[in-house]
Length: 392
Ligand code: RFL
Ligand code: PHB
Image 1 (cartoon, rainbow, N blue to C red):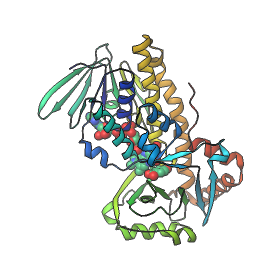
Image 2: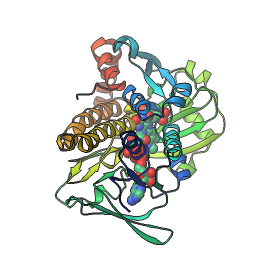
Image 3: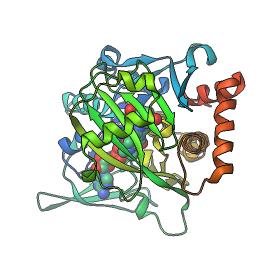
C-alpha cells in the first residue's frame, strides 16, 4: 500500500491531523493499536482553548461541539476555605474556554473520518517505522495475523507517550527533559449535576481537588492521591467523603453525589523530547511531550502541534516548500515550553508536596494570596489558561 502521510495513533492528534490533511486533498492512513471502543473509553481532557475550537471548526467537525459544549468565562481558585474567581473575560479582553470532552472530540473526528471513507486500521499490531531518514519511509504492521507494509512520504508519530515512534529515534538524536511528581490524581465521573457553573481548583491541607464537568448533568471530580493508592481501594463513598472534606462549607453543602461511571488514577509528569522532527518522521502531541493536567493544556498542545504540522505538510505538497517542515519542531517547542512552565507552576501552586515543609507551605500561601489580589498576577494566569496567541 502507498499513502502520502502514515499517521500512527488515532487519539485526538492523529485524527485531527488526518482530517485537516484530507480537507487539503492529502491522503493519509491511520494505524491504531487498540479498538475504536477502547480509544473512546478513555476519559481524559475536558477543557479546550479557542485555538482548539477553531481548529475543530476548520476540520469541519465543530457542529456538535458548538451545540453541546459549555463556554466558560472564568474559574475559581479556593484556598483557606475561600473561593476567588479569576475572570477570563475581564482579564483577557473577552476570551473564554470550552468544556467539551476529549471523548466527544475523538468521536466527532472518527465519525467524520468514517463518513468520508478514509482508512483507519484499528488493532494494528507490531507497528514499526523504517527509513524515515530517507525520502521513502515505510511502516510495517500486523493485522489479523497478516503482515502489511505501507510506503509513504512522511510518518506522523501521534502515538502518545508510550508509542513506538519516539522510541524508534536513534539514541543520541533525542534530548529529553522530565519531572515526575510525587502524587497522582484520582478522577471520578458521575451523572450528577456539577457543584458549580465553573471549575473550582482547590488547594487544601489534605491535598488538591478539582471540580470539573462534562455537561450540566455530568460531573468530573479529581482528588490528589498517593502514587501507592490503587483505584480498587477507593469506594465511591470514600471518594465523595474526601472530596467534600477539601471543599469550603458552602460548596460541600451543594455537592450532589451518585454512583461513579468511571474512576481512575493518573500519575503526574512533565516531559519534553527535543527535537520533534527526524528526517521524515514528525512527533506530535503526547508522543513528544506530557504536562501535568493542572493547567488543562495536554490536548490543547496536541492541537497546536497538529496546526503547525498540517500547515507545514500542506505547504510542502501545495507549494513544494520545505520551510514549514524545517521550522515545525522549533515553532512547536516554543509554545510547548510555555505550556510546560504554566502547567508546572499550577501544579506547584495547588498541590501538597511531601517535602514541602513549613517554609514551602507559607510561600505557596503567599503565592495564592498574591495571585488573587494582584491584577497582574491574575491576568498572567488567565492569559495562559485561555491559551497564548499563536506566533505565526
Ligand atoms: P493519545 O490520546 O495518547 O493517543 C495516542 C494513540 O496512539 C495509540 N498508540 C499506538 N497506535 C499504533 N501503534 C502503536 N505502537 C501505538 N502506541 C500507542 C494509542 O492507543 C492512542 O490511541 O495522544 P494524543 O492524540 O497526542 O492526545 C493527547 C491527549 O490525549 C492528552 O494530552 C490529554 O488527554 C491531556 N489531558 C488534558 N488536556 C487538556 O488539554 N485539557 C484537559 O482538561 C486535560 N485533562 C488530560 C486531562 C489527561 C489526563 N490523563 C489521564 C493523563 C486529564 C487527565 C486525567
Ligand atoms: C477535566 O475536566 O478532566 C479537567 C479539567 C481541567 C483540568 C484537568 C482536567 O485542569
